[in-house]
Length: 276
Image (cartoon, rainbow, N blue to C red):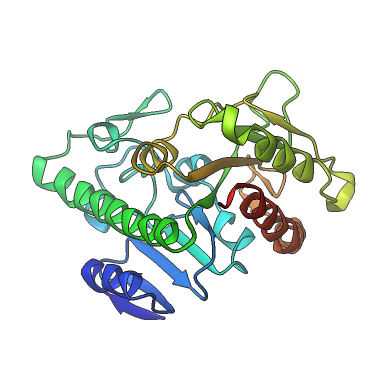
């Protein structure tokens, strides 16, 4: 893996180079092993938290971890194109627009002892802006090369705090073209419902049940590109104990192993159906 500037990462994309890179401010990673018509993203995987914010933050490390999406990067690590955030969403949230990406409160609790200065906010917002420069360059390249693309936007959610039964998988589709891509969405939902988990964890999948796909990442791509479908794919945190702060690596491995085959199969069918 190389450490590269944002400009160098974009240049490599434009030149169709294969590379693994971390941004020189350590805010994101991108690997491209091959230029294919699909990409994976794990924008909430990051847990880094800038040291100059530590003393001012009211939320504990556990509280931050609880709202992040740990292991979502590892679930799609085997795929040719993967972009991931390194920083915690408590510094800046890549799934919110720039005006709302730096929180003052988070999940009903004040985040900072003292309000952040504009200098502190801008450090974070610069990283947010750089991430989307890379995303724009990447999707531009895929659409130019293949005519269309599909992005698997991987997230997780805390299922135990719901007061009703919730699905193992949720697809948020309220901001994509359901008339055009409805069959592809249903095919992905069906594939997810067929997963086999250890420990008799059942796999259920629904559309717009717990989340509706209102994230900025999906909206940014959908609004800027006419031929790219973003599938906001949420897995319930059945792969950890969200209250005791314990990971279940065997469950993560089972998800990764099945996505290794199911995801490219779905992407291939998508491409065959929609290519001109």
